[in-house]
Length: 391
Ligand code: APR
Ligand code: PHB
Image (cartoon, rainbow, N blue to C red; front, side):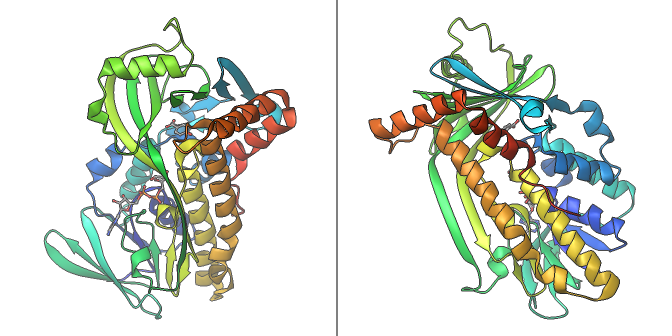
């Protein structure tokens, strides 16, 4: 098989890239290791910055998001029983939308298949050959058989554990990592959510109250990295949530059936550069953010937009200039996004290594933010528009 762009991975990075390329008349084949059911059911975050919303709408695929997504105008941070309310439109002129990543993925997959374009599930890429040559070849396994896909460019959109980054020879890529010793236990609950996104810093640890609809809450608790979802009874989850959200009389957070649980490790990771010859890396394959900034999907979409623009220029006028600037163009945005996500993580979590002094500094930072509109605007701006890129 032969195509212009071989895209490895059908997460947000790969799927957005495939649709953006198509709008420029560029052919691609998407190879995804997992089944369609698995990919569509994978529960992840769900905060869409305006750049991400616009991209989906400009592709003509935003109809369900506009109908079912929830506008989020407020970001609340609680500490010492008090709430700092960030009025996003008042501080920045923008808001964000809450629409689960797997809903975005479902919409993109549905449209790709409806348009009759190649997206092959259960196609696991095992090797990339000639990434630094003019004719790369992607080797994958499908239905028990070894197959190949020849292309002009390979887009490695295969997440942190994929094969693309690993295909780059040792010494070419530099990595920067911070692993946290805590994780998030996430639950989906059949109960009305809090009206605003609420992050809390409590002596017992961080909690977050988000939502998926007016009747589905998405709640998170900071737990130790070695913890497991099954270690927690429903009653323990509720006790901990009420406590950490300063809901002493247990009336604010509405309880309901917990119908899904998952755990996400917290890590900050950057690999640079994002290109090796004709192999381009995007999304989680090259950078991971701790989820406290709600940036993972937005960053993947911004990468896809920059990459699509570079490839479009190449296929229309033969110039590699924009494409070869891909990594440089993404670099500062990626570092700023990691910086913001690490800052929010540091502001809101309990750290085992913190001394009483460190804890005092953290709470005083929250006191300062509560009294300074400038500090509030600094956080709000980064929450709504860190992933802006030109198309
Ligand atoms: N061959 C084919 N597909 C692969 C391979 C492989 N060898 N390895 C991994 N994949 C697939 C995975 O099954 C997954 O569906 O690549 C896809 C990568 O998708 P994501 O993990 O969703 O990554 P990305 O598209 O970069 O989106 C980033 O996802 O993890 C969240 O918080 C993160 O919101 C961010 C978003
Ligand atoms: C979510 O709704 O899943 C969510 C919201 C905010 C975050 C992370 C996840 O920071």
